[in-house]
Length: 235
Ligand SMILES: Nc1ncnc2c1ncn2[C@@H]1O[C@H](COP(=O)(O)OP(=O)(O)OP(=O)(O)O)[C@@H](O)[C@H]1O
Ligand SMILES: [Mg+2]
Image (cartoon, rainbow, N blue to C red; front, side):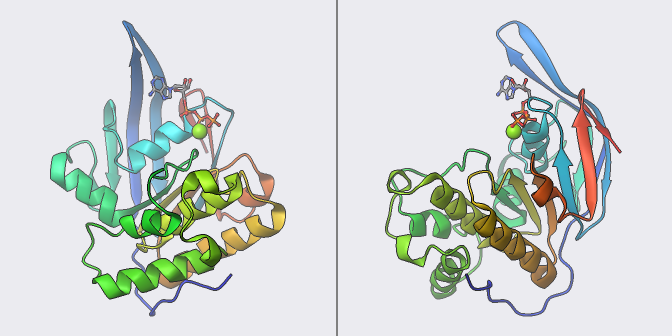
């Protein structure tokens, strides 16, 4: 694995502020209250591990931070984006330009190759085509998958799919990187290399990194640890 190439940059990470943040899902006539008053202050450029029991709402919190769905209530501000009030095109731009997301279930486009999946992440960015191709190749190399660029997700192992998802998240050099169990399908050696890669991205490009994990190995890399339980963050 090689490192993602970069030029030195000022810190670009975004700060996160949440106050009385709530989120519920409706299931038929029932409403399931998942987040029940999250209080959170995360410094720009920090590396946070988010832990908690299965079903606690970790993926839900990441999806709110990533602008995938609007919060039900409270305040959520990421950088200068007020996510309670950001809608439509502005929200799509936030997701495309600010956030890199490694989904728990990868979320790759099945009909596209690994390389096309990674390149797609830059589709709304201002990166010129030649630089897109170069960055895509570098990101695939960084996760050790140069030889699998032409494979579709169904032709990849679980760990390889996970690494494509990581390449897709890092290729656009996001200011906020949200990773949901990013090493869940990787052996320890590859997991350590992926964690090194995320650290390098944070150092070189100054992103804020929020990693959901059940793994002590992964959590140990963070400089701050948050625990989600009963719909609130226990500090
Ligand atoms: N789209 C949805 N509609 C209805 N309920 C949902 C939806 N998404 C999640 N939930 C519910 O919200 C709760 C929190 O789910 P979430 O996926 O955030 O948990 P998690 O902490 O990420 O768990 P895990 O560690 O197993 O990934 C669960 O009880 C789940 O059933
Ligand atoms: Mg989850």
